[in-house]
Figure 1 (cartoon, protein in one colour):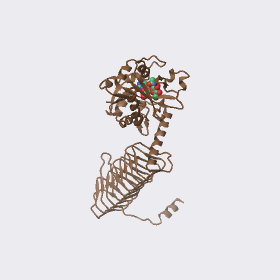
Figure 2 (cartoon, rainbow, N blue to C red):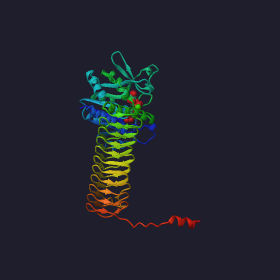
Figure 3 (tube, protein in one colour):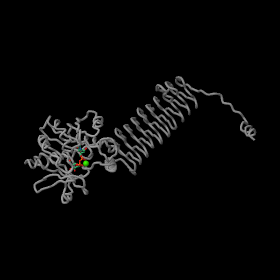
Length: 456
Ligand code: UD1
Ligand code: CA
């Protein structure tokens, strides 16, 4: 079986953060996740991640999805792969892909095409390469008339070798049995006193084995992040690629400023995405919606024909033909049913808002089940928390909740109940009733004039 080893031991000191570099995120997903996704998409699921710096964080992130092995000391990429020898020995009949956990744009097509070449040429090792305008810092690929003779690290390269623009991506296919053998022959005799995985190429050739290179047309497969500036550049590339995919699919963007759409997000045809829109993982948006400006949707389902204007939605579902915003917060566990209207300055949490119900302005609805065609007046508050426990409010179909109503949960209002403005409802109300709770209004005529006179 083909396997993969992902090198993820690095710290990334220049990031100035106490987390392993492969856990830095590109478009909301750790770089390591991008690399794992590329492996799986290429059909490689037997993966071992080499962890090092704060390895426990890698384990915690993976949650048992992949094998991991610890490289206790960082003695180079060759040393890192050596830690995975027991994993290789379990089945050395096929090939092993080695990848860097901090180069997120390696793609399944490159992986598959490189494997074809690797097998065709009968190589012990096939290096995946690309040409860069600025190859500084990378290992240079030394080509000969018959193939390649080795990889020379930038620090060890001569002036002449440094002119070579074809560089090692850090991704390779090895015949697994050859990899085990070659690892045993690497030394740390170089300018950095590290065990270079790249030395496997020249060692293989010296042993009479074949070594080759597969050159990708896409130099982005090499890109990694050494500092925050690089990470921003990776995010920009990924962000644009995702937007381009949606443009091809018929999504409309008038201006992409501040638009961040994570890879897994789906958007229907004819939907318009306005500036400042952030669509995060697990989100699906239907057709002919207008999303934005300044809207965040995370892990939520949005139907067709929905308007979300300056809205934040988390772990919720908004059905079709719903208008939300501006300035609305829909918190986890909510469902807004079709035809509803949620207007400005409304917060909804863990609640269902029925079909064609209107919550037009300034309301808090938490832990509530609200029926169809209900009108929630301005300033309505579901008083769902008594300082200890949360309780639910149930409001039947066709209710009319007057402005500034407080609904003290747990409470149930039947069908077509009216509440008078300013009422604090403290017990259940049956169908078709009016709940009114109001002190008597006194009008003290001439009060202002008397007061002014006294002051003078
Ligand atoms: C390596 C290659 C270089 C290539 C470049 C591509 C070697 C000797 N050089 O260089 O030819 O052009 O990648 O980016 O392999 N890592 C560990 N443990 C270690 C050292 C590294 O896990 O002891 C991991 C890092 O976290 C990273 C990957 O291996 O994911 C590559 O390491 P890095 O130090 O970035 O290698 P480079 O020196 O850049
Ligand atoms: Ca690197």
